Figure 1 (tube, rainbow, N blue to C red):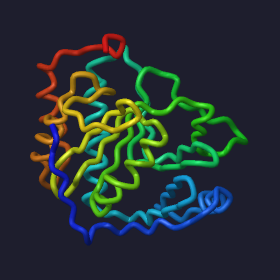
Figure 2 (figure 1 turned 90 degrees about the vertical axis):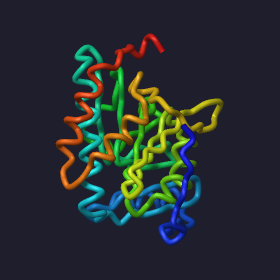
Figure 3 (figure 1 turned 180 degrees about the horizontal axis):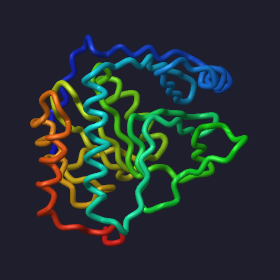
Figure 4 (figure 1 turned 60 degrees about the vertical axis):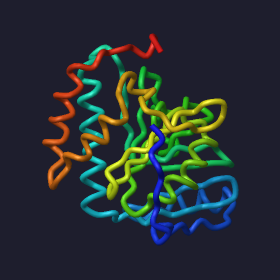
Length: 225
């Protein structure tokens, strides 16, 4: 699947600016409610949050879809960390909408430590996703480059308005658009888009439809990939 990426130029509201890691630390430790901070090399971007009803509805839909998917595989460990800050100290930091670890060994917090994931100490997540309502251009450009630099194996951008899922997998230090998930082995990305098409004013029925569809999909463990 190589879905054309059509972005309204007016949606590119990026306000990345120059900053040092020290300035980033000062900012991330004093975030306002609903704010998220991203840092890449020597630039910083503050997402002011307050995305609204659509962002929230689609965000929760994907929590439901991930739960439904793994409910078929009770022997597979998974950990969903939405909105947490993950850092490669001195170089990169991000706070994705969805952070998924599959197979165990997900980060653990200890009292007295910063409330952020240090990727020098913990492995990178298997999947990161952004829900793009007003940030589609940034999610497909600057954030994509940021997650590439962090070495995230799989990255999804969920286009709320277009009801599309742009899925990328890491191949030879580059992102290639993919038609099947790597972290959710055997899941066609097209099925996610079909689920989005069934979104109206409720996400519950769309999730139930997805649950019915995946009953006929074969299950492959991550060891078989």
